[in-house]
Image 1 (cartoon, rainbow, N blue to C red):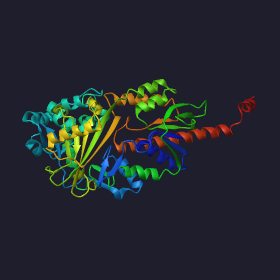
Image 2: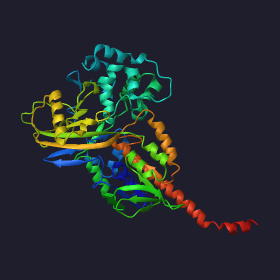
Image 3: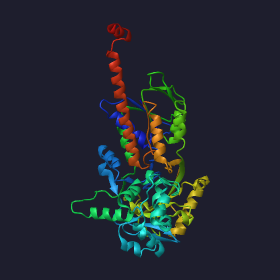
Image 4: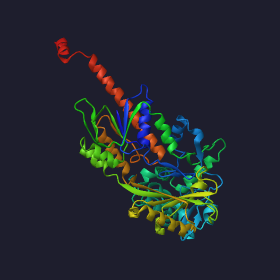
Length: 486
């Protein structure tokens, strides 16, 4: 059994296979010199620096559950309750996101009416959402079309687009509403109105006995997300790990012989089953010798490139209060920044005493030319936008740049239909499974779920295969059975 790819999906799959009863002999192959994929934490000068994601959603249970299983529950931390404000850079100033504006949808009217984030016509149009008829067509539509239709252009551009598409580093008019935020299309279908659905949800939360989660919506680990990677690695004693080895192809091993995994600079590996926990374009290249059609389908899933710039400052003389979690920037503002997280305010244990830590996000679908700049150029660009938006003129004492080429899969309109075709085609390759951010969710919990699910499919497949072999071994030869019949 071979798992290709050592990101969080591949690690989760290898871990689950090693914990199966009985354990499944497994080899994990990773082209990079380290495991963890986009989860990358550095410690420098007392700062905890996340190169990729800095947290994960607690509402999706697979991340919390895995941390609990690995003994990391006491290491989980939520966002700082004392600085619970988020801002949107709009019309040349930072506007606080109104209280009760959950994922772009209002559950409280007063704060929205007092906010300067939308004009009065924009507020009235958003409030008129309850009179917008529900869509009758059953086909997919873009996130932009959906929210423009229900909430109006201004709400889309000033609130929805920066909050939601930033998760995917994508374009609202290309992303699928059903693949990215299906609950909103479900809300329209069930309630006829998003506003009414959110108000109903708020009433349910206020009902006695309906206690909330003990966790804030986003959580992380005290020493950074790489703690999760290291804990998984520590449980892989029964797994053979091959680092710095690139898999070049997956071929048929012959009738009933499973597969042959070609590895650069090494002998081919024999495998009864294979999990491809790579980007979709990587899986496409590997499966080309087996099935050019499924390879072509996987290759249609596009990716966007991004970069993060992390800056550390001394607090003495730093003029901004950093009294919140950070800000997002609407695309229509024309800035290079997608968003900025004030990490030392959002999380404890991120910066030494007397210091501040800020992350800036750049790139994304349609904005990838920015990555042609040097690291120094990206730092300068991030500082220029932070100066413009926040008035930060101080010289950083620490700067780190992390580049992520082709790192963010784009769930374009029709993504779920394409995925269904891919899964149907993969069924023709028994024992081959795919997992990762390209398919059913880009977040860490989604990738964990996908990796664990792939491992479960492997175990089921191997058990069924063994049952067939056992039955065949017990059956008399065909000639003998024919003689008995005669």
